[in-house]
Length: 139
Image 1 (cartoon, rainbow, N blue to C red):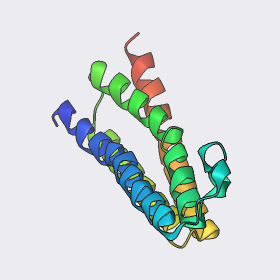
Image 2: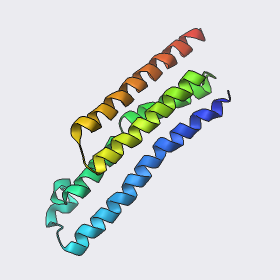
Image 3: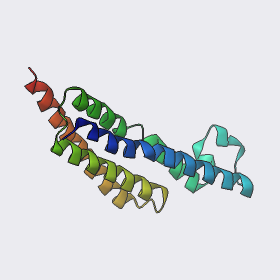
Image 4: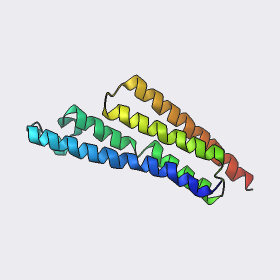
């Protein structure tokens, strides 16, 4: 397996903040057109409508677990430890992040969103363990 395959799920995860930023811009524009933007919106995220708050919160989430994923991916790539297992785990993480964000910015069904979050977090913990074992095997 070529180790560059690790970059595909990384790009898929990196597409999430782009999607959320565009959606957030669209939602903020709609709020402005409706005239429902409160003066404190510049300093208080909750002064926007619920759809804007959801996309803003979803965007903030993209700088938490995904950052750990990027770091682990680069470590695994640099030490030549990208395996089939790593690729599968990376794709599972990418899919769970997309599922999490889609639920977050639409229905915001918290129990469902939590399931996707937990599955992604467990996948990331396994990937962390694979990274530790791979590094340890180098001596």
